[in-house]
Image (cartoon, rainbow, N blue to C red; front, side):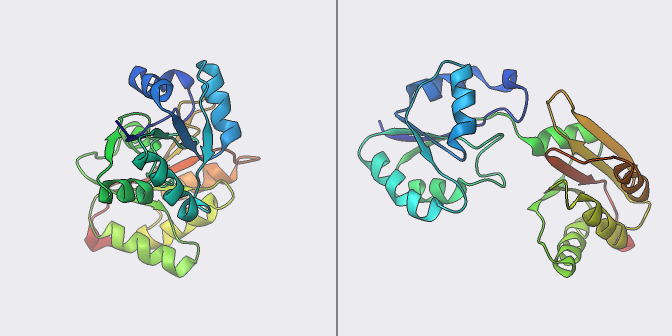
Length: 229
């Protein structure tokens, strides 16, 4: 039966892939992935050989009809990202929505996700949180986005790139104050995994002391009452 599988892949440590994910990848007719070269390394590691279709942010608009056509013809397609759960700040939700609209069977597998790994590791309140994905680029829009998230009074989580992290933290300091509790989760599950915790101003200082900042970064702002914004 044709099925679209949403399959999480490891965000670092390859041992984090599930047995179910490996089975689904082996049973699928096609694997849609962001970077075919990166995904091929993962598949080769587990001895899986399947046709790969490139599917990423800038080509998904014209790749979605092609994938839907294959699904309607009876194919089983597994969607993976470069790491983590597809559709979480990665391509996938548009394809999933289209498949649902067409009445195609879909299965979402649980698995690795930087968002939840960083949240639990931060030590911040996990009763509720606001996930912002990747923030806007303009400073004014970033401040507005953060202020709106902060008004919820819950832990704030977003992804950021190494070359923008310090400027973004400085904006966080403007919005929430120097004493706002911050946690940086970097290179999660990899050998260089790092959690940097402290007040906003302390974390900025620690980041500036680094010779280079590399890797994928998840930023968390601890519970901050709305009235202090």
